[in-house]
Length: 289
Ligand code: ATR
Image 1 (cartoon, protein in one colour):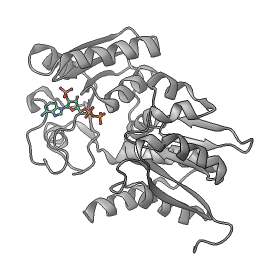
Image 2: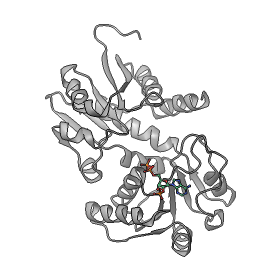
Image 3: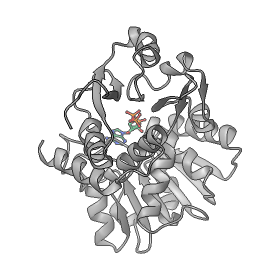
Image 4: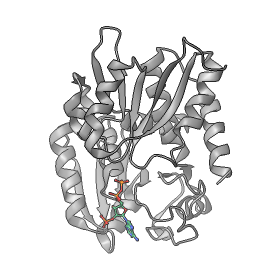
């Protein structure tokens, strides 16, 4: 539908933001849901993030998604944030409520859990190996700790960063079955081999560096495991190929991206978003690159 005087805007703020896949994914969903909204990408300089957030109320936007580097900075400008956003100190979704309050949510963590559920698996009771120690790793480790995982190992090239993620999750999720260690050597081999769920949160294999070796030895993987790579460009990565080759089940990086977006859209609309339409729009956009 063409924008008219009733059209409301929603969008994503980031810096830079021009490569965001969210507009394609959300606009496809909005069309199918019949909502007279338009989803835009707003390039917001870090110094102006407060003004951008205040603009949500001023312009009566539906809300915003928030991406790098603003996920923590927006918090000071919101009226409330949910427990996950508080634990991770990261908001990726802002909702302008009917009462005028600006509320921040984190849908990355629940989006990850839903992507694993969609593939037919339950994180509850699983031993998890999280590889990487950036923002994505924090979200995934926290999501698993609060979804009933039995044990979590954080593995990273720089072990000190892995220890920091473990410390954050221990405190925020009150979860003790956690250890951390380096990527090379026995710690990583044991943690990955033992794991029911292996999640690659590193940037290894991300465009334009596709075709590289997986971040871990393929020999550590085994049948019956679930292996997730958060990298979605390319969609089929070296670790996913290696996992399939040994008979493990795989979940690609589009899963979390689609579900974090779907949960945002659910917060804004109160309706169940068309997940398959969002995934198709995302894959089409990726194919076009
Ligand atoms: P994000 O916030 O998006 O999760 P990030 O903070 O850029 O990402 O983290 C990237 C992750 O990929 C880090 O865990 C990084 O390891 P270091 O902490 O040691 O830097 C990991 N990573 C990047 N390139 C890597 C490589 N070639 N081998 C192993 N790990 C790598």
